[in-house]
Image (cartoon, rainbow, N blue to C red; front, side):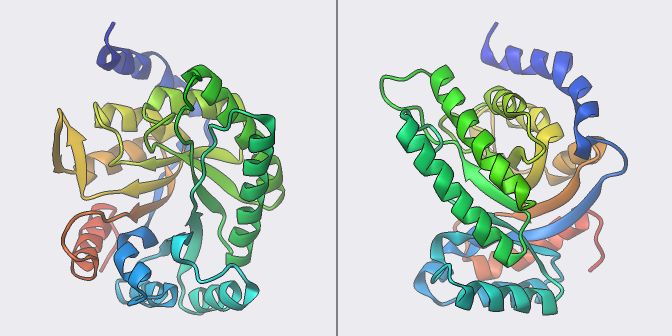
Length: 288
């Protein structure tokens, strides 16, 4: 059986039945709009835009939330974090998530402990911002290691980190971002083995390199955050992402949460994001 057939048979045989056991898959869906700070990576890196500007932009575009990629934070001190949280609250914008860099495929106990400690530190940052979700990366399988070994290491770190994040009310979302998380089946396997209400999938709809919509469907029952992109890979080519199709998947599963625009195309973000946010809000049924 080839990989494509395996994905489809897995979807048909198992994941839909399992959805009934997932908290977010029961009842009526509830969708909210958001912007990923990564969409403005060039502006944030060049300091032509600040995180405070993102809050103001969310107000201007009538967007509900922000997923703050932390790469360009000037610091993680209270002097930066707490005024930003206050501005967001006074603006009616929820900083619901932060996105960080991690590599959870750590082959030694010492490296896994270090990664866990760093994750705990970001949980504290999320707490100060009022965010209840952190996007994490699984990383790449180390040389001379197997994928099964790496998956076990990822699960070990997530389980330990979730013990702390859960005590602070913060969910960890493992993103499909290449490496160990290239395929939906592996991501679902890791999340199921961790078996924590504080660990799920940060579903990036633009990151799968084959059978994208099939793999998205496999992840939907476990999604704790969804990032949507303008483009998606279909049959070895890049096409416009079918947002109504994706939203329909989420609604059928009873997903409750954010759809955050993560813009990565060539048009400057200050021009593209307002246009795309208007489209996204229309697709999820939010008034202008």
